[in-house]
Amino acid sequence: MPGVRCKRAKGKDYYYWTRSDPWVRLPNPIASPDDFMRKLAHLQRIAAANSEKAKQGTFGGLVAAYRQSKRFLDLSDNARKVYDRYINRLLSRYHAAPLHEITPEDIQVHVLDPNEGTPGAANAMLSILRVLHAFALKRNRRVEDWTAGLEPFQREEDNERQPWPDNLLVEALNSDDELFRRATALSLYTGQRPGDVSEMTWSAIKGDEIEVRQQKTGHRLTIPIHPELKAMLASTARSDRHLFILSNRRGDRLTSGTFLTWCWDFSRAHGMNRTPHGLRKNATEALFEVGCSTAEVAAITGHRSLKMIEHYGKRRDQSKLGRVAMGKWGTKTKQEREN
Image 1 (cartoon, rainbow, N blue to C red):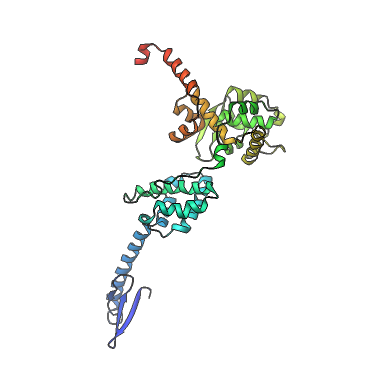
Image 2: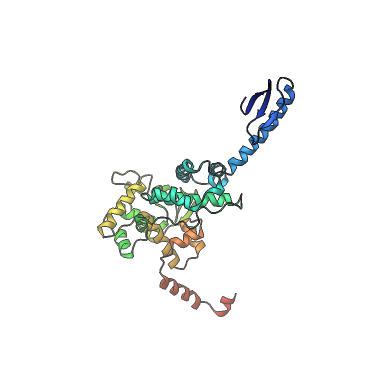
């Protein structure tokens, strides 16, 4: 029987429960079978409870709880797949590790350093570790921050995700390539991620608005159509309109990967390196620069985090904002300002 061991001494058999320290002596199962079973069942329950408690205090137990949490289940399907991919890599190292034994030094040596050649993966795991620590901290205040002092790697592609300079943006919006021009305008004037832009359909346009369901967050938006975008969409011949607003050279739906290649080719021909995601930052900055509040910017871009909105708009032009602010200040009377 698992956990039970018989030892013979001085011609007698003695039975012990071995899954405790020290072993616990059991009644003789032959002489007192009922007492033996009751004692064994009691000890098995204690062992199961201790095992579950120990499991909850491990990284593997934490991950199991997180995967059942509302926070994880509320993520989009794509986001959960990404999280699972990197969580599984972390589990291969830390599954049985007690939470209080994981240290920043250990994360640096066994997670970040071995993945220095793939900084995107290293940064993703670091980000997920921070999410998991925040989740653990709400359940056990004694868990130290195992990401304290750790810095993400700088990636070459981080430069690619910067906003497009004004001169490059003007060139793109006036490109002779109608398909590329339309894709650029739709990305810029809606402020959406490349994957969401490529999924937009003509039927989603309702009057002067376009309806969007963000893949990453599942958030539904109704975005007013910018006048420049409205004019461009109106100029698209009916015969060229299929289900999706954007199409590739063959007339099929434009994928975010193809759009990325187009942006690389276009920007590199101008001595730069930019991606579609940079256009989302251009939109965020432009909204700030015309005097929009953070909440108003979020109503267009769909950002759920105010911190992220500020990050996307950090390069906005201070002088433009200053002129907008002074204009608002100067047009209000003292009484209006006080009210």
